[in-house]
Image (cartoon, rainbow, N blue to C red; front, side, top):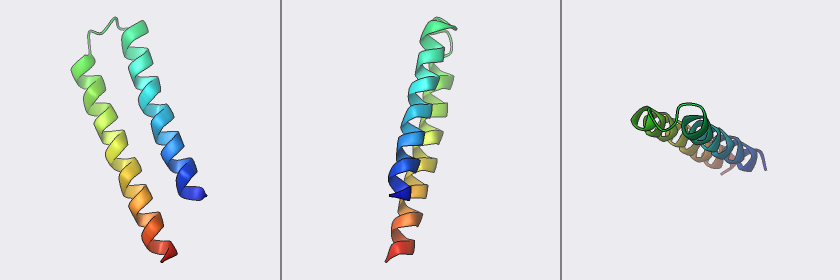
Length: 56
């Protein structure tokens, strides 16, 4: 259950970055926002893989 919460947190962070980029910055920094979302996705995936390997 712990890894599900970690994936949910990473999803919320990615959506927050996209929301801030579109509302506050008016899509001026879309490349940077996409790069940040990619980093959050990779960290969430690594967290998921590590947790799944620890359970086995």
